[in-house]
Structures are given as structure tokens and as C-alpha cells.
Image 1: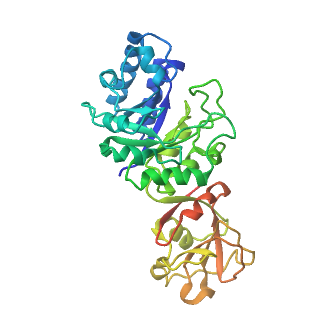
Image 2: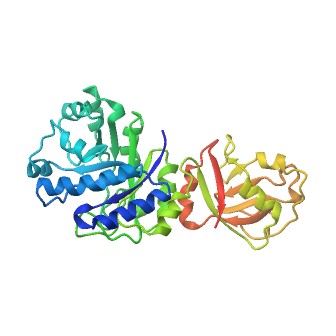
Image 3: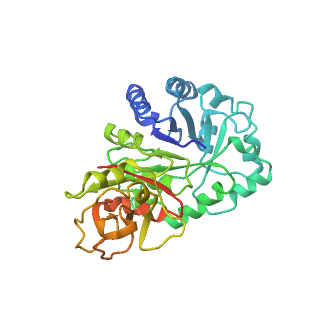
Length: 362
């Protein structure tokens, strides 16, 4: 399943031309999904139709998939019914996100709507909601899952709960999504906006670190920036990440040599299948570089978690093996060549036996 990057827009709190410019800019960096909120609709049906239709069809031209966030009050205010999704089809939407659930049978029936609109469910509950819907034989290719975001500081999900909720959907092969928060975005659905992440641990971290983390869990297919507007620097950083394997940022030490830099940056690394909890071992590189000299340097200090070390000339057959340190230790036969920034060290537990990983220079 291809992984997507997404942005959020709030047409009832923004200007059309600003939203369009934002979507155009994000598309340039590889974004292809939109979360669009209809929860705050205050205008009449015709005005709502005109505004949302113009923006969604503009997004379509840029190749975006648009999911509209809807709630029961919207249906009554606009005089539309869950039994007829024509209104959303005419707006150009690709799906609707149900802010509130029904009895299971209703959701299953919605997935058979004649327009092929996706029906997106709230993932942020560790209950058998999805199982119930599936027992009613839902049309699963048109069933999505998406976590909530949490505007108030301290109210977003803890990781272990997020994991359990997400696993319920992933186990059934349902497309999944979650939110990260821009550190510059000020717009959300409500008057409180302390950021809009799914996970509390992501509230104050750079967007690219949060996205790398969500993708590394292998539980989330699409990562969406919850608030508007992310800066161009954030969009660019997100567009540059590898969505399919963890690529750690490396800060090299001053004494790193060219052979070590080549080993770190130019090779496809994977963790040995027979793991140790002291280091992550990338062993194939030592075979390729076995004839390359590597004099000792930066090898007297105690190595710390997140350090990247490579075997030096004193390490025999293990010369030029790359390791990422997981527990502090000393070994003069290894050179410290760089370090993974502290904020990215939350990715280390997701490098499992045989996991593939790479490095990019800061």
C-alpha cells in the first residue's frame, strides 16, 4: 500500500486563495492527500457548496485525494442525509470521515454508496467498533481509518494506547492515517490550538521526526499535518523523508574519514537477524570494505546511545562493520564516526531483526 503525505485545510477559518496557494506548494513537495474540515460550517447550503466545491476541484487538478470531516449536526444544518451521499459527490470529495459512529450496519452500508466515496472511521478508540462493522460485510477497499488530533496540550494519545488502537485496523488491512503538527501552523477547527497531533509525544517535535516515527511503526499509511499552515521548510523536510524505511539523520564527528562517510551514507543497511541489545549491527558492509584501511580515531571515549561506530584496523574481521549504539560501552576497536540526534532516537526501537535503514547527513 503506497504511503501518502497530507495537509489539512479549514475553509471556514481561511481565505480561498491562501488555501489554494498552500495546496499548490504542498503538492510541489509530494503531498497528495487533504483532510478538510466541515465541522464548523455556519453558512447556508448553497454558500457551503460553492466554497467547498471550488477548493476541492482545484485540489483534484493537483492530484489530491480529499476526505471531508463531517458530523451529524452538519447533515441536519444542510438538510442532507447519511442515506444519500450525492451532496459530497457533487462537491468532488473522495470520502467522508465520520466524526461519530453508528451501529455498524450503517457504516457498512455506507461503503456501498454508488459514488465510490471512502468512509473513514475514527481510530482513536481501543474498542471492537471496526470488528462490528466488518461483521456486516463492509466493502473494505472503501473503508479507511484515521486517528483524531488533539488541540489541547496534554490531551493527545500515549504511544501504547495509539499502538493498540492502530493494530486493530492494521490487522484487518484497513488503510490508516494519523496526524502530526506543524510548529508554525496556527489554524485548526477550534479556538484552542496548542498544535494538532495524534500522539502527545509529537506535540513539540519537528514534523519530519514525527512523520518518520509514524511510518517506522508500520501501523500508519498516511501522515497528515493537522494544523494550517505548515511552513515551506516543514513541507520540504517532510517531502524529503523516506516513507518506507527509517533514514536516520547523522551528525558526523570532525575526525570522520572518507571511507567511513561512504559506509554510512552510500550503503543500504539492515540489522542482523540474530540481534544483540547492545548495538544494531550492519555487518554486510564489512565484507565490501574489508580491504579499506581505517585508522583508529575517536575511540577512547565511552560510546553513548545513538552513537554510530565503525570497526577500525584493530578489529580484525570486524573492521568496517557499522554499528548503532543502544547501551553505553567502551571499545577501542571501534571509531565513533557520528551521532543520531536525540529527537530521532525514538526511532531506534523500530529497527527490528532484518529491518532496513539508511542515514542522511544533517
